Length: 358
Length: 256
Image (cartoon, rainbow over all chains, first blue to last red; front, side, top):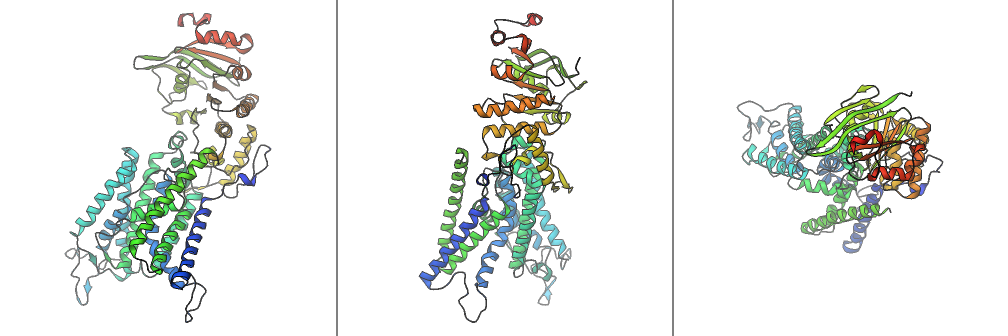
């Protein structure tokens, strides 16, 4: 769409009438926030936030910090890719954090080794069935299957019983959390196979996050699926009259969001080498916050995966920045809260301004 | 005798005990532009809703293109070739002009089911052609509809109906919410459609507009057709008399 440049009907193309992409504003915000930490760092603790100040390390930037910034938001970022699609269609998904918990528990129990330190695995979930040392594809498929089923339930409830997405996914949030506690009666599941542990090793979460982000940005921009997401979020009735199968589409959107949440669960449990019933608590809210900070409108119709990636980076910069300034974690949470509300206020303000015709 | 594109016989719609539309016999020929007038609640919109399949008729026949039709929804009607410009503009505000024109029937470059890749070039080219055909002026096709004026939006909605080789276009008060200039623009499009020989039904309250654009005026009162007037055989006062009930067409005497 970006190459759409000229008018019709005798009107000359007017560059000033060209909309500025919302992502640009978000990107500027990212740069500004980074600059604030850079300046504060130099003033308060006499160190650089972004740049390399150690003489025994080569490179202009502080490589390690950059890696941490993106690594710590990659897993929630994967969830946010799905949440962005849901929000663009005008919905909301509160269940992703709980889907992470349930999926991590269930998938991990299919990824356990038989022998730990020469003894049979003491934490094995399915020892009598011999479901140990399974190829890595089994827990991956089981995990993604969990996400798919959860998404299918969410989507069908929303599309066919017409209950608000907030309620449907709130129900799933509570139910899936219960599921993750029930699965091993609250016990953590550990000792994954080497191949499973490789999924989230090192910078793998970043690689998976960026790959999925690029894939879904392309899908949202260039496919029928993407167009219909925006159309439904923009004017559901118009979409229906135009012949879009709104119900089918909604189910598909929630299924994709569920599967992405389960991918996040696979990466997270692999990275931590354990699955716990409390995994992913509050992730749904972080994912929604990244999406909203990234320029998506909770009213639907607007947003992009690129924006959400930048939103995730803003999150990462803030968390890293606070650690860098040696401030307590309490402040992080408080500032995160302020930023979430600030982003929504900004969105409202943008909408009002557009409604006036600005 | 020109070919009849749409005919209704005894079209009737009751909402419970309310007789919103009673025994409407109506005919539209190829290339003809007919205006429907009448007071609020006279049955104009009800009539249109029965034709476009938005509602299901209580009784009567709708014959479109020589065949009796039973549309289950607006989509059915659209597929048969009836395009409707709704009062509440069925546009997606956040999409640009080509996406709105092709909403629900996108041109596909590579078919991958729901993830089919769109043919943006093809849609743009077709959009430019359609807008030229309707003489709509829009400065930048790539902008979202949200940023456009009411007139431009209405023009896009109308251009959409004209893009898809429709057999019949129905407009329900297309200029009710528009300013003077924008109304002129929409009226120009309607004239272009007339020149192209495309049949049209327009619901309007604007007497000047009706006399400017229509060949024939059909007046509804209290759910019934009370007059069927050729434009050059009638006058504004005449039409008002029919609308208010001061007069009733001779052939409709039993309706009053």
